[in-house]
Length: 165
Image 1 (tube, helix red, strand yellow):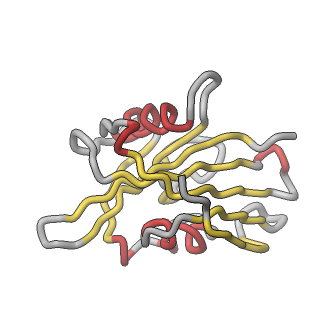
Image 2: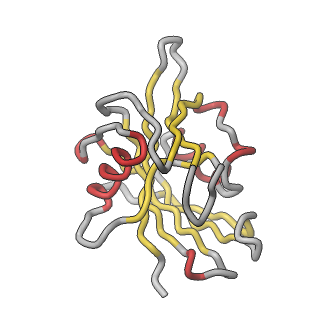
């Protein structure tokens, strides 16, 4: 079975007080993670590039409009669920500093700006503490996160520097 292709984007801004913030969302629906604070994104549809998919997903989930040319590739995260291989997914991750609009709640997500140095780790997936801060700090990496049989806690997390494009 091939891992599902998904994509994530972390919109970034500097607030009026000079604090770097990232837009995350409280997940409202879906099979996995309802109530958790997550990155914005989703599945790549047939015929879409990962860039097209993330622009669509950001608009659907937050109403922000981003352009493919403004995406900053951050790397990938290969999520492996040994107890539930159907959940395996390969996420292509982007950062974005340029967007149009103000985030608004959708049927899927309630967007919230968080200071980059004060992420709500206790409300996020356990694996997020391994890779989200690295990407937000500007590291380009390819991660492999293997989950335990409970499909929530992390069995292992490894990464290598992502190749420059």
